[in-house]
Amino acid sequence: MTREEEFLRDADPFRRNAFLVIKEMAVMSPQHPSVLVDEVLHSIFFLGEIKKPPYSPKDIVSDDDMLNRLKGRYPRPFDKYSKELPRRSPISCVLDMIVNLTGQENEVGIIKKLQELILQLKEDGATDLVSSTICVSQRDKTAKSVRYYGVSMSTSGCNPGRIMIAASCFSKWDGYVADAVMTYYPTKEKKTYFDATIKLPEQVRCQAFNISQIKPMLPCRSCGNLFGLKTDEKQPQWPYGNCAEPESVSNLLKNEREVREKARPTSPTCTDPNRKKAKESVLKELRRCLKEVNFNWGKDEIFYTPQAV
Image (cartoon, rainbow, N blue to C red; front, side, top):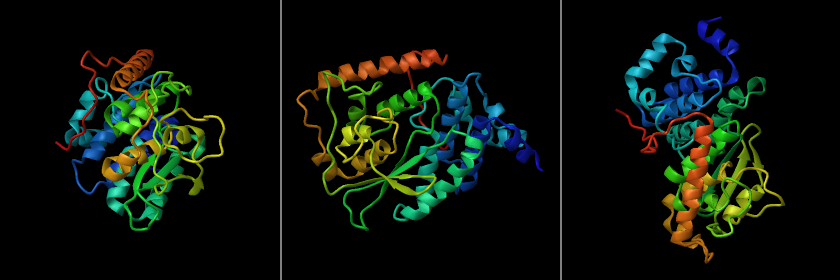
């Protein structure tokens, strides 16, 4: 058994999975440095930092040669993980890498490739850095229309999930998706003063799959409320923003202007002053969560910008 195999066998689930994701991304990347590898390193190191007890990059990448190689190619994640917030959770970066390498049109290939990794990460019942669902959105249901992908939050625990959802609202997702999520975040109750939920046009395809079984899933109640998707669920089971649909729909709206125009929020409470109030409440909750996990965001409150230096 190699040292690496011994480490994977003996390490706790977070360290094991963090190392597996980093190694997989480094192997998949057609070039180094890579923006996506840079981003996944920062996102994972941040999640290690807010663990109790915290994990340093050296705890996660215990192989000195690999650690030094990563530090040489990607110095910024090592410097910024304890100061700046990631914009999204790690498996979103992995998904982007797979889509880039496979081609967006190869839906089955993308889901199968992601499934291979997720099944490894879930060994021994692990939940750290695991996304359970993937969503595919298209402007219509024809085979030729471009596919836009998203995965559910690959976080475990209340605070990491809330932090990542808020960070995605402020720094990554399309404005309509972010505002829809902020209509509810951080609870499952709609704000009385702000409703920015949207209704996707009928012709849009928005299909979620269980990654482990590659099984189609109906939208949950939360996503039904956010995007007007049809569902049989009566009560919200998942936190708003946790599922794969927000990321997938965000990517759709960023690229398909006509769909975005048709999906415009229509509530009279969706005003700039109310939006500002909602954003302030989300920021307040984000700061509270960061304080609870002992993360010092700094007075500038910066979101990390990945680079290929």
